[in-house]
Each structure stands twice: as structure tokens, then as C-alpha cells.
Amino acid sequence: MHLDHPETFPHRHTWSSAAPTLPDGTRRALRIGLGGPVGSGKTATVAALCRALRDRLSIAVVTNDIYTREDADFLLRNAVLPPERIAAVETGACPHTAIRDDISANLEAVEELEERTGPLDLVLVESGGDNLTATFSTGLVDAQVFVIDVAAGDDIPRKGGPGVTTADLLVVNKTDLAPYVGSDLDGMARDAKAQRGDLPVAFTSLRGEDGVRPVADWVLERLAAWTAGRPVRAAAV
Amino acid sequence: MSTRRTALLLLADGRFPAGAHAHSGGAEAAVRAGRIDGPATLAAFCRGRLHTTGLVAAALAAAACAGCDPYALDAAADARTPTPALRDTARKLGRQLLRAARATWPAPELHAVAATRPRGLHQPVVLGLTARAAGLTPHDVAQAAAYDTVSSPATAAVRLLSLDPFDATAVLAGLADAMDAVAAQATAAAEAVLATGSTDHLPAASAPLLDITAQQHAAWPVRLFAS
Image (cartoon, rainbow over all chains, first blue to last red; front, side, top):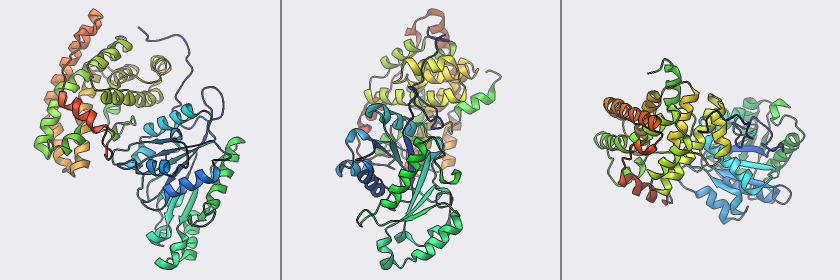
């Protein structure tokens, strides 16, 4: 019988991301979630962030594909990170469940990456493409990015929804396409401001040179706050 | 039944955050093969799963809840799970359930399992330990395990076939008496294990087709569910 064991064991698993330290007392990696509709450029943003930051940070990625390993395979094919730093979580046709309502598989993937590859600075958790209400649990990530794009319609910021309204950073991607699809970038910025108040918005075109820079800078600011033990979320600063 | 009915409802709720939502209990493979194509075939699938995998899971859970050695039960679960893919799935779901259980009903024996078996125990064993920590009885958790065995494929069938959710729920209601009977049978087996100290009293009913298709499903390049 091993029941009611009198010894106090070190805990391998944290219950949630609420605890900022690992069992050995060191500070765990900062966890940033990236969500948004299908095709808005989440995986491309993750890939660009890895390329921009991998030389100075130890990074790992968790993908949440809806029914394939497409996103994980994209990252592997483009060799943005070594294979052991990429983990894919399966979501049973419900991506928002896996990042918000039942985060156990994602927490496990994050912890396994951290154990497998040694100390990490940053773990990016990419949601499967979903709808405008999909947000990450605060038990899974420390801050979240919501990625939309100009080609899906410039009324998305006006429509709002929890992703657009509450994400710590709203990324409006594919700005290079705006002239071709008739999207009004100034109007999107105004609508986003009305929905989000002082929360930041980044306009990106990943096709351009260093196009992910605004997002990378935002991540580095969050990481600096995390490392210093200050609040990570912009709203709390 | 214990008097702690609310704790049982909480544990048996499909929304309990222990990772089950990503698993179909073999339904995805059965749908692809055409063996589940509507309410009638879903009912037949669920009945088969209940009396095989379900009975074994319910007995394992009841025995763990009764205080039998969880590590011996885990070995017995391995012996009753010939397919590597299903062993992996059972341990993965066991780890995820343990995480939720430790936060929901913290107990030294749950923490001890996490520390001594970081790769996890089979999910039904963890379910039994969780029920024990929640103050439930072996019969309670046998019912929860039996219900879990059929509710996963029913929920998955709704997503995979766009099956009418009322029909799927009616299938579960139609199996209620069978679930109660399986829970009673599993509880009796768990009592025998506790009395004799031998896991040989656990049922060993198997569903070879579920084993085979689970291993095949694990190799599919494109799928909606993890198992």
C-alpha cells in the first residue's frame, strides 16, 4: 500500500501557470498564447517570432491544430526551431476548449517541453484557428496575443468579442493587402482603440523585412517584466 | 450510494477539466469504418464498450477507491490493455485527471502518485483515487467510470456525424440500466480484490476490435480526436 504516504514529495506538476516557479525553485518560462481566426497568420507570426528571437532566447512552441499536425509540421518544415522544441496538442474538434475550458493537455505539453529541453525563456502556445470569442485561460498563459488580418474584413475590430477586446496585444496582420481588399487601416485602428482603450495594437506585414518587429518588441517587454517579477499583463502595469 | 452526491456529479460531469474532450473512445475509427452511422449503431457500439472496457474500467476505479494498491491495479490494467496506443492514452488521461484532482480535492495520496509515477497511472485507477479523495464510495466511482465509457463516444459521435444531440443523449438514457448493472458487477469485483488482495478478481473482458482500431487510429495523419 502506498496510500497516505507520510513523506512530502516534490511536485512535478504545477496545477496551473499561477505558480511562477518550477519545483526546483527556478523561475519557469514566460508563457504567451496566440489566438485568432483561421488563416489570420498565427503560425506565420509564431515562425517569425522564433526566427527573430531564437538567437538570444531559449524558445519552445506548443501548437493546437484542429484536426491535423499542419501547424506543427509547418514550423518543422521551415526549421524555425529544432523538432524537440515543438509539441502538438490534439483538441477533439474544439480548439477553444483546449486553451480555455480544459487546459490540462496544453499544460502537460508546456511542462514536458520545459523538462525535455532544459531551462526555457519563452513558450509560445498557438491556438487552433477559431472564432472571435476564443481566449486563453489565465491558468495556461501569462499573456495573450490575438491575431486578425485586414483581408478578412476591416469590420472585425468594430465587431469586438473577447479576443479583440481583452487580448493583451491585438495584431492586425497582412497590412500589405489592405489596398487590394479595400480595407481601411485607419478605421481599424480607431475601432480597435474604441474597443480596447489603452491596450496595444500592432499592425504587421510579415512579408516585409523584419515585419514581426512590433510583436517581437512587445514579447521582449513582457519577458523583461516577467524576469524582473513585475506584472506581465499590460493592463496590470 | 454515498451521501456526497454533489461530489459525484462534479466528477462525472463531462466538463470536468481532465482532458477527456479530446478523446472519442474509439468512436472516430468506428465512424470512419462505417460501424457507427446513426443512433442505433451508436447504441450498439456503446453497449459493447460498456460491457468490455467499461466493466474493466469500473472495477479498476472501484478497487482503487476501496483502498487497493494503485500500483498493483495499474499493472493489472496494463495486463488488460494489450494495445500500446491505448496504454499511452490511458496514462495520458490519468496524468491529466490527476492534475485536475490534485487541485480539486487535494490529498496526500494523490500528491504521492504524482511524485512516484510522473508518467502517470491508468485513468480508471486515478479516477478511483480521486473519488476516494472526494469522499465517494467504490460503487459511486464505478458508476462514474461506466458512464464515462459511453458518454465519450456519444459526444464524439455528435461532432463526427453531426448526429442529432437529442438522439445521442437518448442513447445514453437507454443504457442507464445496463450502466447500473455494470457498476454493481464492478463493485462486487472490487470487494473481492480488497478481501483477497489479488487483482485476479478483476474482470478481464476485452474488445479486440477496439484494441486493433485504436492502434490504427494512432497512426492516422489526419484526425479530429486524440484517440
